[in-house]
Each structure stands twice: as C-alpha cells, then as structure tokens.
Length: 578
Image (cartoon, rainbow, N blue to C red; front, top):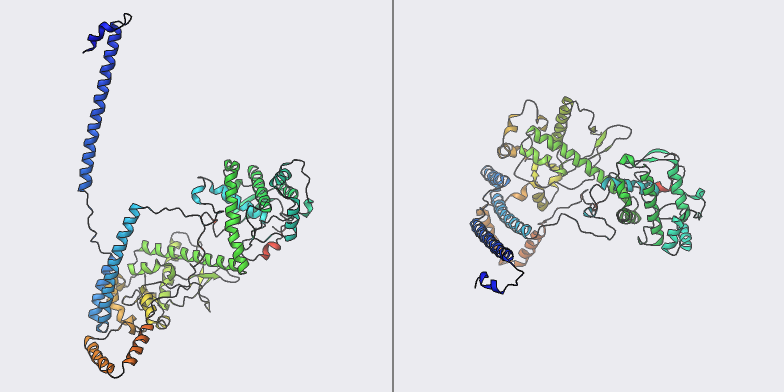
C-alpha cells in the first residue's frame, strides 16, 4: 500500500504540503542509507587490499657479516699460515668465535622480538618516595629548579664546593619540639604579620655576616640585597631556628622538617619574585606551583643530599673521593671525545680509532702544585709505545688548534719527573696486544690474558713517534689485517703468549698413549693432576673501575655543581668574607 492509499485516512487539516514533506523525508533517509552502504563497501575493499599487502610482506634474512668478524676470520687464517705453533689455538678460537656469533645473532633476534612486543620505557622507576622523576616536571622548569637548589644551598650554608650538610644542633631541635606540636602552630607563627619572634634575630646564624651584592653559589648567581638577608633571618626567628639545617636522620614529614621546608619555599618565592635570581632566567609562573616546589625540595634535600649525608656518616671524606673520581671520569671522557673526533676527522686507520674510542685507554691527570699545568698520571697496563702514540695525537691536535686560532683553550698537560699511578684501574678489553705493557701482561694468568688482549693483532708502528706525521709512514696506509701480518712477529717478542700454544696431533696421540700407560700403574696421580690443571684455568678479570660509582639519580643536580667534601667547612663558614 503506497502513501497515497493512506490519503483518505489523513486528518482534514493535513494537506498536500504535508504529504510532500513526508515523501521528501523518506527519500532523504533512503539516500542516507545508500551512502552508508557505499562507504561500508569501500572500507571493506580497502581492508581486503591491506590484508593482501600484509600477507605479501616478508623479512629478508640478514646475511650481513659484521666487518670486525670478517676481519678476525681473515686475520686468523693468515696468522695460521704464518705462525704454525698457534695452529690449534687459532682453530679453537675460530670455532669459539663462530659459536659466539651464532649466539649473538639469536640473542639479538630475541631482543628484537621483545622490543616489538613490549617496548622498553626510557623513564626510570622511583626507588625512593622523595625522588622526583623527570617526567613529573613541566617543560621549562629547569632554570627555576636550579635557582631553587641554589637558594637551598644559600640557607644551608653550602657556599663552598667541598661542603656537605650537617645535622642540626640537638639542643635547638629539642627546644623547637617543646614549642611546636601541630602544623597549625607553625602556620600561625609564620603567617601572622604581628608574630613575635621566638628568638632574637641577633642569634640567627644563617647568613650572619653576609654582605649585599651579586654572589656566586656553585654555578648560579644571586643578587643578594640587605632586605633579603633581613627577611630570611626574621622568618627563621619566628620559628626559633638559629641555623637552617633539615634533620636528615629523621623522616621528611616531621614537624621540624616541615618548618624547614615551609621557610625555604616561602623565602625562595619572596626573593625570586623580587628579582634575586633574575640572572638565572627563572620562570616566575612556577613560583605559584607549591606542590611542584615541595616535590622538588623533597627530592633535593631528603633524597639527593640525604644520600650524601649518610655516605659521609659511614665514611668520612667519601663524598670528596667520589667527587674527585667523578671529575677524573669527566676529564677522561672529554679527552677521549677530543682525540677520537680528531682521529675521525683526519681519517685515522680503524685500528687507531678503536683505541681512541675506548675511554679506558686514556689517562687522567691532576693539577700541578703552584702551576697552571696538569701532571699526567701513569697507566700501569698501557705500553710505553701506546703512550708515545697518545702524545703524538695530542701534538697534532695542538697544531690544528693553533692553525684555527684556538690555542690556549685546552688544558696544559705534561709528564712529571715522577709519575703517580692513575686511580682508574679498569683495563680496556680486546685491544691489540701491543697496547698493553709487556711486563704487566706477562704477570697475568692465562685466563686474564685471553680476556684482556687481542693476541693476534697489533696496532702501532714499532716506533710510535713516527705515527701520523706530515710525511705519512707508508705502512700506516695498510689495512688492519695486512698491518698485523707485517709487524706481529716483531712486536710480539716481549709478550709471553705460551697459553695460546696447542700441541700438534702427533704430540696429542703420543701423550694419549703415555697417559693410558700411566693410568694402568698410577691412576690416582693422573686424576689429581687433571684437577690441578682445571683449577689454574681462571675465567674472570678484576674490575676495579672509577666508573664503579653510585648510579646517577634521576633529575639530580649536575655533579659539577654539587661537589662536596668535609663537613667542617660548614661549621667554619666565614659569611663576612663571602
């Protein structure tokens, strides 16, 4: 029955216009349904096409062999031809290398699958409730954060690089606890404009004798005015705190530690808004983010500095030693980067770059007393020829900087009459054997020799002082394999590599017969001898590294900024001189 068949049933007031509108509505709905069906059909076609493409995808097998592996294989074959006494060793090493390569391919494949299914998060996980993660800080907060750290150091008296925080005075702490029992009492004492100081301002030790002007706190600058000093001391007087010093032996939420937190945040907001830290380019909008400032305070005081405080309590001077090791590591890293980048720019052979790119191959230094130079320390495991090569690299770098008008910017380093040993004792692994000192190498056990050095490759000319000259030595143009073929026999002489010698097949058969004959007469002695030989096969190398330090804490201040030392520095702070 069509729409017109119902026309007689329509009420009288509904005319033909209503009929037209209903007809139009039905047509519109039909068009809409048709469009939706067409869209669904097109999407089905696109999905089918995508599925076909996915099914056609396949991963090409990775037949690429690392260059270093090919190099080792060719080098091993040449060494076999040239040094018959090492036949058995080279075959054994080749089998071991192939097994390791196969294992590496499998492990890399598994790691690649895991990375696809469950991506590894780049964010560290919290190890302490007071720790502040980088992901929890807003963009652009870093300058304000550094200024806040400097402000805490200012009140704490940590104006010297070697200072470490000390515990608050016990009598003052006891006096504070008798005056305050609730947080409301703290708030009333601080916020009341007519609050009566609990102690005279003359008894405040914080900033006593400090003079107005621009002051340097670590790597920050504060424009200290007389009003700022008086404001800080007046606030501390209201709380009865003579010397601002959080109690790091107690929890962070105690009433006394709460007073320290409130006072430092309030004074920082006041001084920063007045322009005290304008030289540090802070964003004043963060001064109203009280939760962020509180979290930053807890991280720096009750996480970062608390660790240093406890470390110093266990071992006096430990922070000073760690700071020195950190400085040495950074200097070695700087030196490594300088030499390696120069080598890459100058097109050094790969054997040179492999050494220059290893941070453990570079020495450290110390400031010469009364001089502007630094004394180079001795690395007991590095050969004299390798040291000469490093000096040649430094000489060429100095010439290049003079040509570019940059002389005078680098640290002046010299070899003292009597060299002291470097505190960095980690040995670089698998460098060519002539990098290592022969006497040091020969004193190692067989297992340690195998782990430490690449026995069948060499890197330096017999006289390394002839290296990287303007008139290039022709043998420096040889690739690493041919260079080792030419100089290995000459450079290997001072090294004891008897652990690499394997008996020939005839010797093995003869020894086997002899052993069988002896077994019939004295089997127990053979067993004891076998066990003794196994015990001599040591499979580890000692690792006493200057890199063996505490893990860098997430969002912690730059170690250059917070170098610390004796706690006596704070007790003897001369504010008037500062």
